[in-house]
Image (cartoon, rainbow, N blue to C red; front, side, top):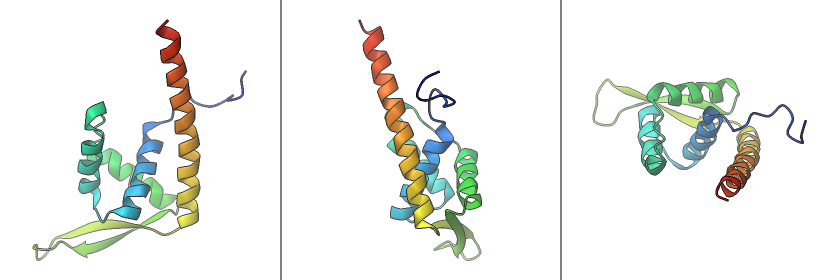
Length: 121
């Protein structure tokens, strides 16, 4: 086979979503549904609209992998409502995960561009 024997043709959307969530957790103070809305807005032009269950599955996988941890806080303006926020607990694991996903995304990008150039002839 080739250099990438055993690799999927394209990166899985869940892996991409998890990499996005790591970046957002590092830079934003959002809870689950806010992550969904933020991602939908950022990717509107390409039609990517993850549902809330995909967001939470990704967040839970990041927790299981020891990258993030959740913490509950009172929702401002709501007496009894709590919302769950997330924080990075292992920066090294988070950085390594994002580095691995970046390598795969760059490979997928090259593959798509090469294919587009081939079929455009």
